[in-house]
Amino acid sequence: METSRTVLRRGYEGVETGANGLSSVAALKSVLKSWEERLQAVRDECEHLQGNLLTVAKEMGESETAVKASLKGVDVPGKADGKR
Image 1 (tube, rainbow, N blue to C red):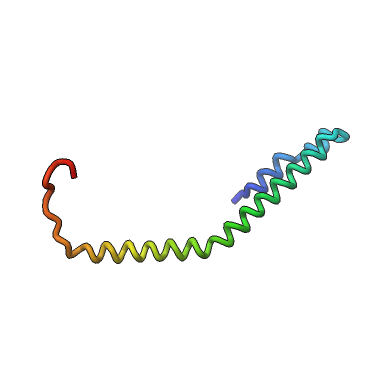
Image 2 (cartoon, rainbow, N blue to C red):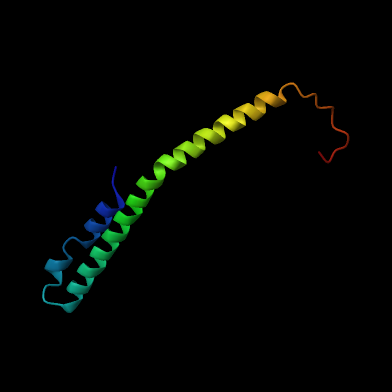
């Protein structure tokens, strides 16, 4: 699987060689570093939330199953009108 950071880094390949001596190279390196740090922060936050999100998903699935099971015994009459 290719990560966003890998794709980002590949986009910057060769820039330093092709633009050697230009002040924009330093700016581009700064931008790359900034984006890499942001992507790492997003990854860290996702890893932090992963356990909680999985727990919530499991609990919601169990609740949905319980509600469906409890409604199986409810008799629903036919449609009273065409709006339902």
